[in-house]
Amino acid sequence: MPLDHFNASNQATFPNRYWVNATYYEAGGPVFLFDSGEQNAEPLLPYYLQEYHGLSAVMQLAKRYRGIAFLWEHRYYGDSLPFPVNENTTAAQWQYLNTEQALQDVVFFAESFPQTGHLTNSSSSDPTKLPIHPSTVPWIFLGGSYPGIRGALLRVRNPSTIFATWASSAPVEAQVDMASYYKAAERSLTRNCSADWVAVTKFVDDTLNGTNETLKIDLKFDLLKARLSGPGGNTTGADGLTRQKANATNNVDVASILMDPLDFYQYYGFQDSVLPFCNLLETQNSTAEPTEGGIAASKSIDVAFDAFLVAIAELDYAAIPGDPDDPVQDLSWMRQYCSEYGFYQRGDPENPLSIETSFLSLELFQQQCSETFPDLPPSPQVQLVNKYGGWNMTPSNVLFTNGEFDPWRTMGLASIESNSPHRQPTVSVPPCNSPAPGTSFFGLTHANMVHVSDMRVLLVPDANHSDFKTVGFYSPVSQAPFYTGLGLFQLALDEWLPCFHSTSLDM
Image (cartoon, rainbow, N blue to C red):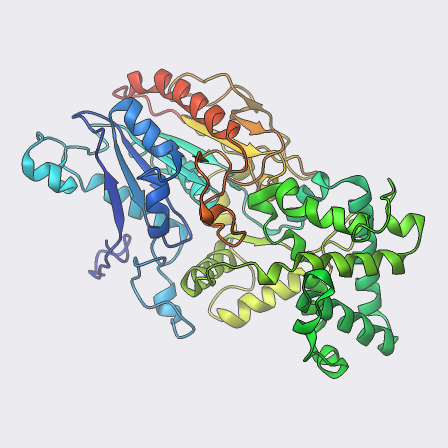
């Protein structure tokens, strides 16, 4: 892959990984490319190209339309590394990780295939010899979350290369301020849990911002002890904690403990990740009957705070087994959001219903970005992404799907935030190469679902999906979204594919 697609004098290249499944391929069949986005693509292979323990949209489409399926790895992730990614990566090396270069990677890949040819023994063993140039067969892009953004942008940017896209949970509106992230979670909470979470968050923020040093130390000690403790009142994990150590812990780290129960929300939703916490909180660890208005309103904030601490300790998220974070993924994605996407998930002190601490501020996020990447502008250049339309984009041949309570829906076309255009999805398939009518968009919102809940379905129990830290697989929480989304996209392709050779490329 060329390192720099836009500078002919730079001849540097790097190896870009992809995988292929041609099981169902017949000459003339479409190409279905599933984009892994901001992660190592290899762990996705058994789930998306081999349908391990379930079905994937990309392989079901390849089977139905006799196509070929690719799994694509994004530059600067996994083994697709132009340079080593670590704290020593230089600004000169980071400069090639941006939206335009990464989009052009897909275009370059698609256009590297021959336009003509026929299937031979050599072409079946070497997919690069297959006649699947985008001028010959339709290329169809599938992706969820950031890859969903990429699919939508490619359909706007390169309609002659990418014929159609399924963009799931795609936050196409880049914004620096994403205080809305936790609004989606707040909407899904039960009334009493929401009221107590809001009250406890305000109590913690006010105490840490106050002048009573003794209360501050007490609060820090209690929150840190809760995080370090375990179920059944086991406090041995906190044996080494002292008031001195608690006092030395900064306010951001302490206040962030309040968000521990939401660590896995965007993939598992309220019922599987937050409801157990809310039940512990509102029953005071099964010692009291819950009230509709919550503990703080019926008793006191002190009682609510104590119940919150016990619930955190009882769930003990830190003890859940899981693979360690991928340092390459974490650093590369940080570079991307610091440079172009923003998405700073900050607390909003002006929102009386905020469940996120205000210590997670815009200034804090920007400080972290500026310290890690001092070469970047003082704020993410979101206009580099939003020039393709953002909330107001009107691409043709794109299906947009979202989860009702997905935090990233707030930046997608289905956003209901106060500053969004409040566009409405329609399940009526638009004509080929034509956008949906008016301000609507072609898509649907899955009731009660969260993030990327429709690109794959789990049919057989799988240990990876009982592990809350295995989030890279877009863990499905229901079968219905997969079948609904896949069925609608197939209806659309049935309408669009016959017009592939049309010269109309109207947006």
